[in-house]
Image (cartoon, rainbow, N blue to C red; front, side):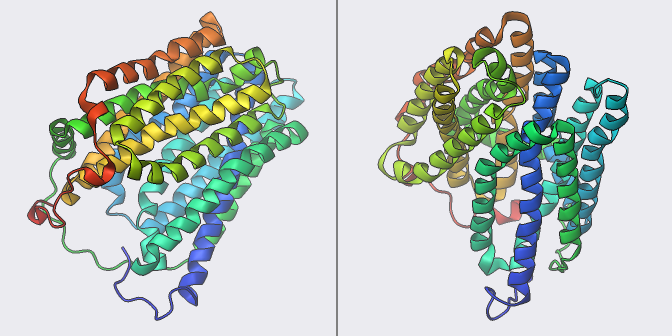
Length: 432
């Protein structure tokens, strides 16, 4: 939390300098992550040719956040945020560096990194990110000051979006020129640089009031679940999100297999970078367009149309045969999937009372995004057993089921976002 007092001109001076340093630190780390997003699946598939392993790596990249988010959030809440972020960043550098360090002697002997190492690194780095992410929630208001939180968040989002589009293209070029282990070494270096930049920052959180008696974590989760159950629109959008993310996990988790066997492109060529950048562009389009669309159309109509598009485009992705068409289909598919996910998030934040925001949003996110690691794992197994096109078609049943559920439920009648009931500005503060 930030101190209430802020400099007279928060846009300049030490506050702005520290915020720029923090954004630079995150940007360097994001750039390294974008390289690894290409290099790790390429390394996993080119060394084994095993689609099931590829799905397992993708699953282990998503699973830790879903499993650890609630308990880690409760733990980190009482820790020093700066020390937590520094420790997890250095540990992430060490974990990522394990692959290129191991690859050198193994390559000298004519071998390749063991698949267990790749799965382990994916799991460890993803788990460390949960701790970093939980600690970072207090960093921006503490560094920028309350009055600059919105501007700082916008800046960080813009940087992240640009890197999300350009980074995979650079990653594909780097994999082609340097090899996947060397690219992972660059990611490890990016973590180290990020940690050095973080170490330059100093901030003093405001003293926290004495916390109320903490209830058991299970009780907090149950309260969030009860509220979701009592709110039909929130409940339905959360369940629809699970079906959508189930398909999404399979599509993204088996992208290398699709590139090789569906698009007939080399695994270590530019295709993965191009497709990842196209997906990021689809997310950007959805995030920019959703606000204006929500002002004109009901939430139900928006979600229904997005699910129709996601289902149809999943079929198109399963049968596409060229990289050019694949780029167009995947960008549109990602825009549709992002619209489903973002609609659920915005509705939850709009209609949930303030004292339940954390519990409801965390619990709903775990349910709605819970399909992603399952889809990645199942998609990899199906691709190994039945072929990639069959795997994508079967995985598309997640989005199709969500569409049928939306038609059968009250979601289709949901009004515009502005017409949804909004809780009182002050609601049950004594229950916080």
